[in-house]
Amino acid sequence: MSDEWVRIAAPATTSNIGAGFDVFGLAFNEPCDIIEGRKIESGIRITSIEGPGAEMIPYDPEKNSVTIALAEVLKRTNADFGVEVKITKGIRPGSGMGSSGASSAGGAYLGHVLTGEKLSLTEVIMCAAAAEGYTSGTMHADNVAPCVLGGFTIIRSYEPFEVLRVEPPKNLGLVVALPDVVVMTADSRAVLPEHVKIKDLVYHVGHATSLVYAMMTGDLSLIGRAVGDVVFEPARAKLVPHLKEAEKAAMAHGAIVSFLGGSGPCVMSFYDKDTHKGDVIAEAVKKVYNENGLKCDVWVTDCGAGCRRL
Ligand code: HSE
Image (cartoon, rainbow, N blue to C red; front, side, top):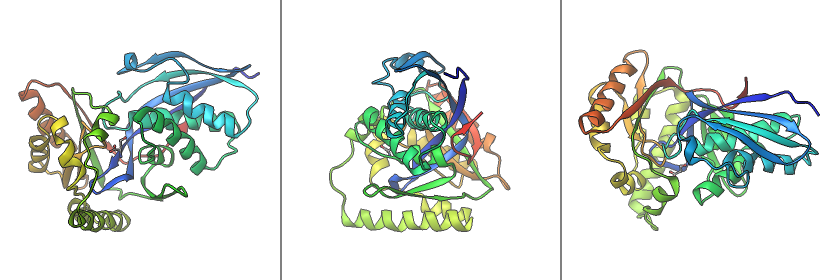
């Protein structure tokens, strides 16, 4: 049995991106979770969990997203070995930055590497999505898809499962602001309406299709106009303090659009790297939270690649 440790970087991601609830996703360059594993005789065990929010994450392999996804890959490939796992979180749970998605995708990708890359990347995403379903209560793949593939991803369909990948424009910069508030995905989904009005459906189809067009043509101004959400963000706004003020501050300091990241509470802003400075936008959003007595972490980053072996 080889005892060589395999290290996987699994990036943070944002999902929904306005009108694409459970459909759109985008990988960041940073931060990343680091998932390490080595083959053992049998079974799956977690021997270390470190990093922000580690105390919120279970060691029980049947309750941990990394090992649920990993076990799914081992099962699908009939692996005849077990795995010891170490987890270093770069993304704290309850952030809206795809924390459980990075754990799930990182675990599935680790299994993929350890089993000799027998699955397709679509199958790796499906194994990761099964783990996401366990932790958030509903199976959705809009974080795990970009986490595995990188870039901008679209879940064309869940049944049958099909995912598309688009390379985002090179000058699309990202600012992520994470206030010191925890919003768990299951809670953020519990506040959503059960029904959508036809007029809101029309708004979402128009915006979602335009965002794909804008990503494919590199039209940043259209990206700004195409990110819009009249259903999900309004329902969730009560869970995220000072969301509107934060978005307004980002826009006033050069963002092309600012919106709720995933299920929240992070506030995402897009900007044009050729003409504006991400640091200025980040400081403006951070100031809104600090002035209201809340700590706020910020990242100024780019669109990035998917899971990779380090
Ligand atoms: N699309 C999901 C949601 C992403 O907004 O609930 C959260 O993981």
